[in-house]
Image 1 (tube, rainbow, N blue to C red):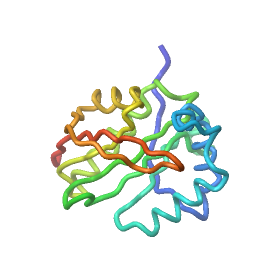
Image 2: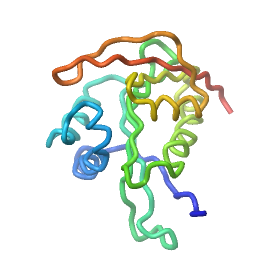
Image 3: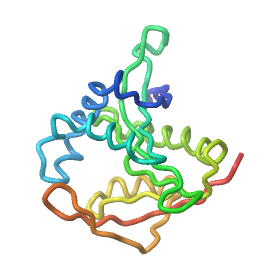
Image 4: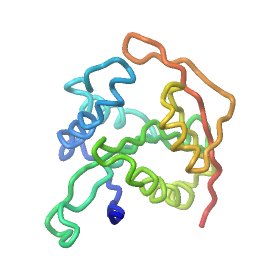
Length: 179
């Protein structure tokens, strides 16, 4: 059995991390195939970082791991991203728009570990009481992942435009408490 990855979450800075974020998006071709796309648009990371800066309460956190487990001082690499918004759609609610891990590293517990790092911050420092996610109805892997993290379907759904087509999002929520 392989050792779990050592990860941390860091704020994504547009001046420092745009290329690394674009590489994470490019390392998830299966996600883009869900939308019948060959991959992310060339400027997707820059556009998302600009949108995050312009949207109150929205943050992108890089999921990073050390390049060398035995010597973390040798640098780190971005292997995923968490995109979320505080106090949306209402006060004390955090909305997770995306938790993405590069495909070669998926199914190793990295997403669950990233959620376990974010969750206490949302409850304690962020003051959130509920976390909401919207999952594409056809993304069964994501639905199962969030259910395993304690989220439950609310029965709510919404059609949203993605590119030139509409996608149905199923909403899930979980309550969180201060520790």
